[in-house]
Image 1 (cartoon, rainbow, N blue to C red):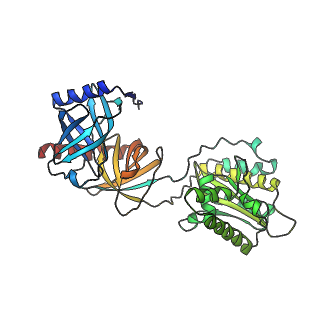
Image 2: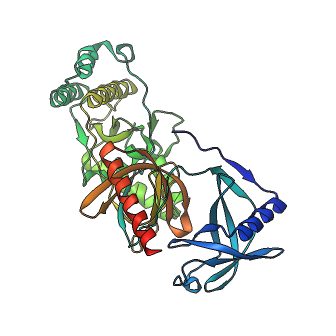
Image 3: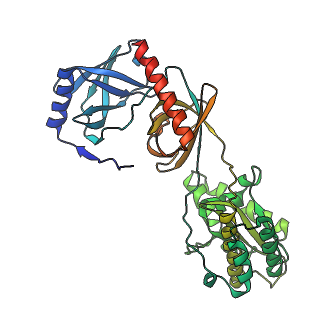
Length: 407
């Protein structure tokens, strides 16, 4: 797919001239409101403002909280879009200031439609960073794990057998050890949160020392709970709340009998789906860095095996959304009221599901633009199965016909 060519128009005189041409030609523009995208036409222009008349007189703009609106339209074969301050509202007119700039991109390839009836969609997105692990070869692993490596490399790998073999090696390193693959209950634990967000090994060398939990570790591979505690601070937790969190972590470890412990993430492609855990309960026999290295090697072997026998659990709950418009290239949606404040980062991978009649359409895309205050997101499709493409095109064509009939 060709990459859109983007540039910016920031000359006030040129922006004003473009708006003037829109008025003279009577061209339609798209007005992005908090809860919908409407069409309209430029009715008149002034020195610092211009008026837009909405095409649909039933839209009550007086009831909408409008400080700014986004405007988009096709001009000279390109799509222009800008952010305009709203200065006055009087149905069906909006008076707005000229935007500071117009960003441009090539004319969209696909027609975009707004569903004639409210359409609900389910959204899932990856809450944790994507990682692309490097390739692993036998030289990256201790010689003692060569047989395990070749077992994991089999095209028809027996993943259950591999887990048993890795579990046996874990017990040789530390009697108190095991493998945990996350499920809906365990994925919400504190340790799972550290694993999934950092993708690093969680190592507490001495569970009797606060420093082991909080000392900053300048490593690309190893972390401790300073990662989690710092995140709590950034989220607005007080010093007292952070101290209570740390105390709870240490109490839980003491209750389990840990004198030192290590957790190694288990990856499936770019996502952490579980961890290896080992801990020592004997004084003077804390887990060593050499043992941590062996545990990391076993984690790598599991990753290789999982890649040959895909294992990708899904944990994150669906988010209810309202589908505002859609094309064969992407869609625009808004988080439904009642879901609370949700912030999805730009660039996040997203899955969207909705029903077109009795047929479910499943689409995969990337968040390319968002408006946090309005809880709305533009998503560009990246991977669509052929069957889904046919269903999506049929849905759009059908609605284009309906909209044409209504006109």
